[in-house]
Amino acid sequence: MQPSAGPATDLPHSHTRPVHWIGTATALAAVLGAAALIQPSAATATQPAAGSAASAADPAPAGAPDAEKAEYPLDCGPNSVDVVKQGSADLDGDGRQETVAVVRCEAGFGTPPSGIYVLTHPASGQGAPRVAETFLDPREGMSVTDFAVRGRTVSAKLLGYSSRDVPRCCPDLQRKVKWRWSEGKFELTAAPVAGSV
Image (tube, rainbow, N blue to C red; front, side, top):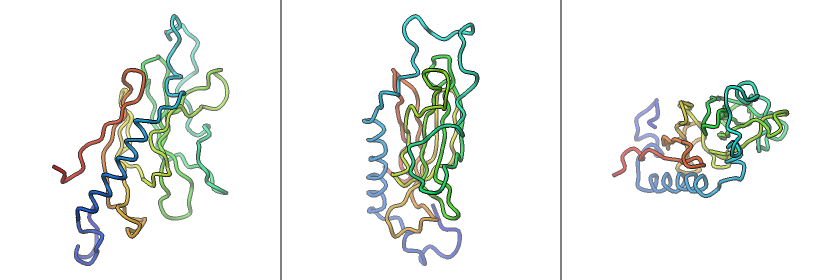
């Protein structure tokens, strides 16, 4: 991401160096590795039991889970959780819609890191939606743009920082990622880093 003002030579963090790409690879490997290895038991909770496949005649919760009513695993202190973006679709093909929400802690200024969560209706059909899957943990320190839910695919661009010296206003790393339900779990794929071989 190039700065919008001043020549590039004035901003040392705008130069592309191998260490930046190593930092990018390390940070994204952590996200991709965590997503690939951590599969909460709730990830398959939306699958119907044998002989109980959803149909038009089955009483199902109306619509998609409401992202504003869910409780997220965020510690925002005295601030509240801000649902920045959301989208809904039947991601796992069970006849019921899930909602994917991009959330972060509210802040008076700055851009707090974001989380991406998959929400389902509670098993009882009543109560607040529950988090069934975490795509991005805010502890990774990333922001989310270009978020979309299309069909069974969730896509986003993740923005991050190559070092602590990079101002928090201006992420200098980015990568496009997609999650898609396949064979009973969400699979994460990431586009190649720009400029990589």
